[in-house]
Each structure stands twice: as C-alpha cells, then as structure tokens.
Image 1 (cartoon, rainbow, N blue to C red):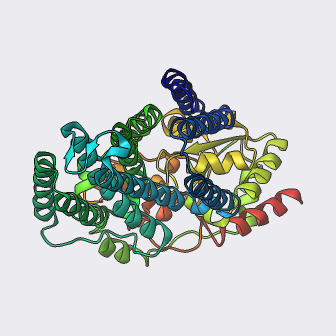
Image 2 (image 1 turned 180 degrees about the vertical axis):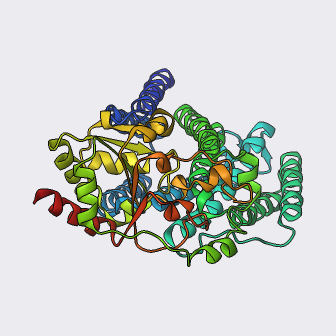
Length: 467
C-alpha cells in the first residue's frame, strides 16, 4: 500500500506522460518517442492502482495477475500478427472493449458500491448515480457502435449505407427515452432502470452506425474513439481514479478534435455524418458510366513517362495498403530520384480507413518524412508536376467532388491530380470507390489506367526502370 499523496503524484506523472505521448504522436518524427512515453505512463498508472487497491487475499491477486497475463498476452499476439491493412478494424475492436469495460465497471459499482466508496446497496450517492448512468450509456453505445464499425471495415457487413425507414425519428425517440431512463435511474437508483438504460444504449449504438457508409468510416472511428474516452472518464469519477479521469478526458477530447478535422476534410458536418448515409444514391450513376472508354497502359509505359519526368507526385490510397505495395513504391521512388526526378507524396486526410493510415504505411517503408505532404500543402503543386502516380486512391482524387452537385461527395476537398501533365492510375478494375461513386478521373484524356494488383504493377515498373 502507498499513501494517497504519493498515489496522486504518480497519477499526475502518468497524466503528464499521456499528454507528452499525444504530442509525440502528432508527428511521424516523434511518434516512436510518444508511443514509448504512453507505454511508460500506462505502466505507472497500472502499478499505482495495484498499490493503492492491493487486495489482502491471494485469490484476488491470482485473478488480477491472471487477467493481466491473459490481456497482455492477447495484446502482444495481436500486435505481432495483425496486418497494417487490418489496423482500422482493430482500432474499432479496441474501442468496443473500452465501452464494454465501462458497462462492467458500472455494473460492479451498482451491486458493490461499498467497495468503491460510493455508498451502500440501495443508498448510492446521487453524484455516483449520475456518473454511473452516463458511463454505462456512453459505454454501451460505444460497444455496439464499434462492433458495427468493425463489421463494416472487416467486410462482414456491406460498406454501403444500410438505410432504415424513418431512422431519424426512431433515433430521436430512442435518444429521448434514453435521457428519461438516465434521469429516472439517478432519482430512484433502481437496478432495473440501469439495465434498461444499458439495453437501449446497446441497441441505439448499433442503429446509429448501420446507416453510415464506408466513406465516412474514418470519421466514425475517430468519433467512437472520443466516445470511449468519455465513457472511461465517467467511470473514472465513479472509481475515484485520477489517472482514468485524465486518460478518458484526453482520449475523449482528442477524438472529438480529430472527428472535427475529418469532417472538415470531407466538407461535412459532424451531425450529417452521424444522422445520414453517404453515397446511398450513387450506384445507378456509377453503373451508367462503367462502359465509357478509358486509356489503358502497361508498366513499361509508366516507367518511361516517370523516368523522363521532372517531378512526380505519388498519391497512395487503400489499394496500396491492401496490396502491401509501400516497399515496392519506395523502391520505385528511389530509382526515380537516382534519375534526377523530384518525388513527393500527397496524403489526403481521409485516405485509407483511418486517420494517418497512409502515413504509417509509408513510415513502415522508410519513406523520408520530408517527402510526405498533406493535401493543403501540396495541392497547388500538381499543376507543376509532370506525372501524378495514383496507387489505389479513389474517392479522394475524384474531380466530381468539385463539379457535380448531384454527387454524394460534392464539396469534399480532393487532391487536384487531374492538373498534372499525366495521371497514372493503378487499380484492379473499374469498380466504384468505397463511397459507391465512379471516379471521373478515369475518363480524362490525360489519365492512363494501369490495371492489376498494386504491388505487382509497381514491381513491374521497378523492373522496367532498372533496365
């Protein structure tokens, strides 16, 4: 056991390390250091919690150590085996576990309040009832919402919006009932109201995410990240755990800020993402455009064009992630630089399936940080580039976002790849993008399609450059 003052100091130290971790993760150059600081902070928080609430019997210690061992073992296994392409759904799965943990802790506090210092059974402090009800409502919502997000990202459910009849009215009615249940539980402390709140929040979480289409998934992931943080903070108050309150507040606020950035990058309001589908009416338009002719080329053509270019801008997307083509792409860029070609990478904020997805993949391939640029920093340079090399990025390069007011992606800022002298576009086929919208770029006169697996096509280009 340690004193409350020492515990408070250690929790404060852990909180400072968490803040430094977030600061470090804001840049690829300091991400490794930030990750390490976060790990150290979490280690301090766990050990301090164990020291403060050290049980006196060996059975409790056995359960705690067993839980840490099982959880840590599963985490280590997943860290070593999960592919980078599966990282978005892994993050969604983690969010679901945070929400579920909040529900379990709130239930434990409800039935054993004396262990948490919040009163006795049937006489829990009103403040604790408020914290519990908010924690369980947000946690349950986060759990089922994250499960649906996981299923959509993992391909277990269609990425297209699943539109339910009168969904807005249903969501509003359920939200009002949920608020009423929370109020009634706080007033009465009735366990049945607690479980009704939990069940309704579980159902509402699933129903709110089902109508959201695949193109909005980066926003959904960051939004659920925020929800999981607020659920943790609410339970932190119930437990009286400073570290959990700090951590939850940091995750909740950073997730909310990231959601705002994502919505701004897509020119969409946060409310519209939560309440509406995306790309629901685009399938007919995409089917009508599939039979238009496109200019098709081979790896040798692409190698010749880029080898004789002065400037090439590479635009990576989810197709690169699926094919694991980042290493071949870096090799191609290295060969081009040896020929005197200026090479840069353009990253759209919502490229891939989660924020920063492309940055992580390029860093994994040891692409220099100073060659990677965000949309607002490089968009004006496409007009001065000889070649734009698009590898699996679809919706974020679609010019229809700027010209077609009937398109569901209209108004979303996109990369101006069509302004380049030549656009080389690697894609498996002519299928529409994740938003269900056909890309107008395919049919431009200055676009050459390179059909095939992104890694295989890039490797063929590398071979041609080496000859």
